[in-house]
Image (cartoon, rainbow, N blue to C red; front, side):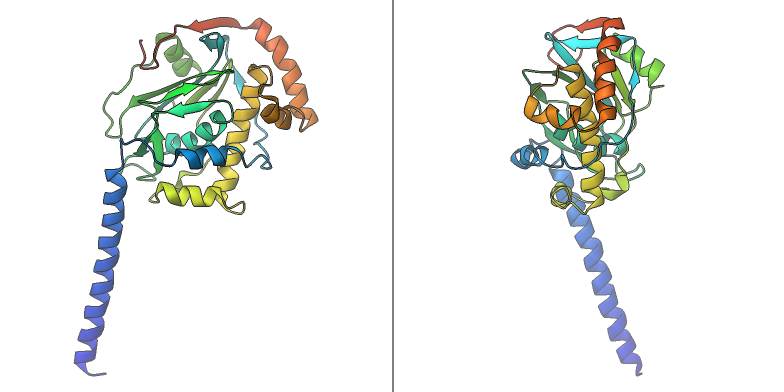
Length: 275
């Protein structure tokens, strides 16, 4: 083959490689430009929260705390995480979908996990400016560090004690009344480097791993919320409290557990938290 053809092939390959690099760079730039802005996909999240009930919740029994957290006269769901954390990033998808079955958010903003940590640029949201309303539960979402690792929000003392003693300071750390969970069962590698629309498309595909893993975790959270809030709303909770005999047994035992807890009433702080 004449040398000029080699030169042509090399030039073509360089153009293709350059195009790929530019495309990835532009995609990353476009995603980054959305960070800290109010989400435009809230209606899609609401619709997504209405599906996935068919996915089996992970057969996990959450551990029990000595305190039973409540706020504003309702059982409290508490999240402690960080914007840079890829495991928090994927857990937020499941947590938000679960919470939307009981109430509504305002102020959710786009966020990505750190670009320099494992599973970089995992698309997610931040709770920093979010507010949540529900007739059944209260929600406190604490992002204690920003995407760049700087301090962001203080963790209230009584929550901090539970987090460090029972969660060993690991994130994400979630409290559901008097139950708690450390870490996530969702693989961040499924979302890393993609954008929010990609995740939404996968959450509409019952055969995708994102669908299966996110809804399994969302349904686990939903099940435990139903156990602490009296099984409301019934159109949601009847699915989870009556689905299996093992779930019913857990629900029945939760009454005796609740009676033995020390009730920790959190002050009605506008969830930008006082430590």
